[in-house]
Amino acid sequence: MKGSVRFENVTKKFGEVVALKPLSLDITPGTLVTLLGPSGCGKTTTLRLIAGLESASEGRILIGGQDVTHLSATYRKVSMVFQSYALFPHMTVLENVGYGLSVKGMPKAEVKARAEAGLETVGLKDFGARLPSELSGGQQQRVAVARAIVLEPEVLLLDEPLSNLDAKLRRHVREEIRQIQQRLGLTAVYVTHDQEEAMAVSDRIIVMKNAEIAQEGTPHDLYDRPENAFIADFIGDANLIDVEVTKSGAETEIALQGRRLTLPLASTATGPSKMVLRPHHIRLSREPGPERLPAEVTYAAWLGNSVQYTLSTAVGPIFAIAPPQPLPFRQGDSVQLAFAPGDVRLVPA
Figure 1 (tube, rainbow, N blue to C red):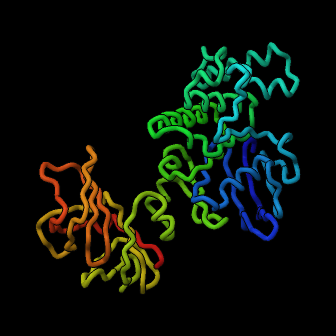
Figure 2 (tube, one colour; figure 1 turned 180 degrees about the vertical axis):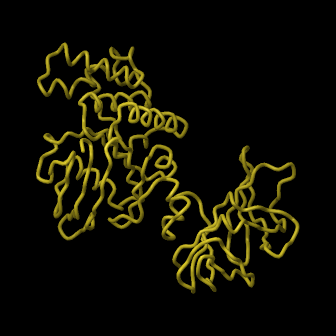
Figure 3 (cartoon, rainbow, N blue to C red; figure 1 turned 90 degrees about the vertical axis):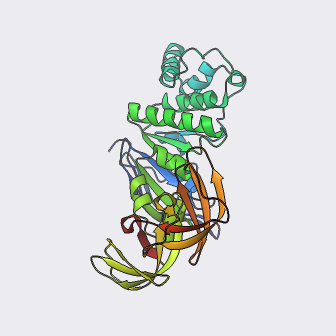
């Protein structure tokens, strides 16, 4: 139970504006759960409700089995890592890490020992005497993580912690945060709008849209089994193609540009639907065939480890990713598009 987070029909309103519709969720102790979604979807509001920085308009919030709905942030066993690091520039790194412990009135010797242990945990053992200005952005973020974990929170909250870092450093620091979380067995709630970042660090992802949950599950579940077009498009790249389901059952038959395709998917209804086709599942060739779709290359970009294509087809523009080829297709080439029926998913139209 320690470290669990539970929302029971929690609503947040700012005057007449509903920032969070009735939300129920359970976060298992020791897991890293990411709140993912576009700006304004309610993810940061949810994080601030867990932290006690906002109060719920309705519903109950429980942390570690304790009802904290009306408990201020000071008395909740949570620590937060902010997007801006929020380090004190006039304090040394060691003083920054131990600041929260000092405020609690802990003896100086213990504060120093725990702050040093925190820095060692994040790989900055010998950096305690430096000022924040003498550190790189990634190192400053690790100091912020150390400052949070020395407080021994039941729940670690991270609000877009990597948004100020460049792409390469972001990848490195997210790996470090994930390793620290797993090594310490912390419950962590992580907010981001970056779907690749969410998939890289999460045990579970809660995708939010319009102040409510659109879908939740493991990264694998969300990528391979999207429940709607928003999830299919938001989690990874996807081509959404209008099709007609002509036969339902244990296998599904669809009509696509005069072709009948049988998919190894169970469905319960016929009628309009959308076919989800991931770019890397598409195969391109010059040879026509009964299961292939004619296309024209309108854009080609060689990226070293792959070639990205935009294709013009009768069902609309298609985005494809292919491995490098000795003679890649070029803009203006006529090609044939193929895919395996087992790689296709269907979502409501």
